[in-house]
Image (cartoon, rainbow, N blue to C red; front, side, top):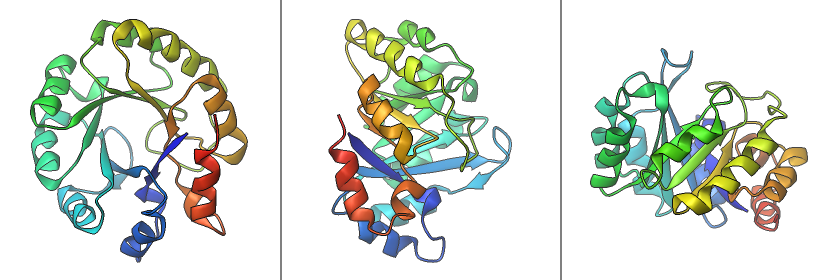
Length: 213
C-alpha cells in the first residue's frame, strides 16, 4: 500500500524537519488547501507548496477543499503540485476543471465525499487518474472512519476496470485498525497523518504500511 503523508499532521514549527524525516520512506506528500468556506479550516497556500517543492523531490498532491477550485489550479501548478485533487461541489464544470489540471501537466484527481455516491464517477471515465475516497467528513481530523468506506472502496474497484483505470486512495480515518481493511478492500494507498507523525518511528510505520496488501 502506498502512502502520501499529510503535512496537516506535521509539526507546524518544524515542517521542514518532518518532511526530511519521512522523505526516504513516503511515496509523496499530501497538502490540504482550505478556504474557511467549503470547510471551517484555513490551511496552506501556493507559497507553502512552493517551499515544500524546494525541500523534496517526492510527488506533491494538493487537495483543494475550496469553493472555487478553478481560481487556484494555476497558482498551485506553478508552485509545483504534481497532483491536484478537486471536489465536485468546488466547481461548476467538473470535466473542464479536471481537464485544466491535466492540460497544466499535472495528474487530475477527484475526491468523493462520504455522502456522494461512488457510482457517479463512472460518468467521468478518462477525466481523472486518481480517486480520493473520503473516509470522514472533509476538513476534520482525529475522528473515526465512516464504516461504509470499505464497501465504497469495493464499489470503486469494481468500476475502475471499465473506466480505463485510476489510482484509488483513501483520506480520513487512517488508523492502525482501519488501513489493513482498506488494503484488503482494494485501496492502492492512503493519506496517513498522525498514524505516521505520531508513531515512535515514522519510517518503520511507513514500511509497515507498504507491506499491507
